[in-house]
Length: 278
Image (cartoon, rainbow, N blue to C red; front, side, top):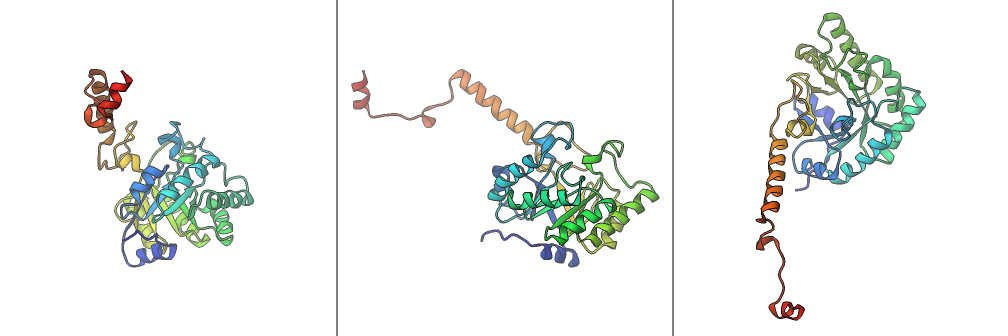
């Protein structure tokens, strides 16, 4: 039976029923098609591509064109999975009109089912305008990588009472604005638990502890493909980076010593035709 894409009301119903769900990242058709073979419900075409795909030091340089370009193959590769397109830095912090225009592009040109943007109460008016315009929006608070420099780097957020209270208010503001879910990144587990209990929309934790309604990881992190650094919240379910290096080394060595390609990987021809060539 083909995998059936869930809808926003169904995600909200999962929370109401106390059932968990998952979100991972993809940036190309190959990885998207692999994810589509699993029960994982959501794919984020994240601006994390800045570091994972392009090798930047942050997500800031990622452009609208990058997001749209990478969303298209993911949509083709995972027809049974809900696709969220990230709104990159600069695409929604100029004006409400700019935010709506860019979100429209991610959905119309990229084919995404929804968009995600970073920020809490300060961007709630933008979220409301987008939702009023018919755009499904996922929020993102806690560690917001696009503005990590303002936060003092990639650090846990909401560690003291005042900061935790602000995160709770941010989550409530996003819910009131019409966001259908909110990502909690690098937030202490007790704070994520409080937020999850106090809002009706799903919380999606990436470094948010076990009480969130959904769990999020970058696919290349959980598969052990991206090895520049491994955040504390990442569990590597495989070590593919090393396996891929081993396979490539083996290909190189067998090519050098002539054991590849052997007869089973080569094409022959009829003896009489070969004689005519000589």
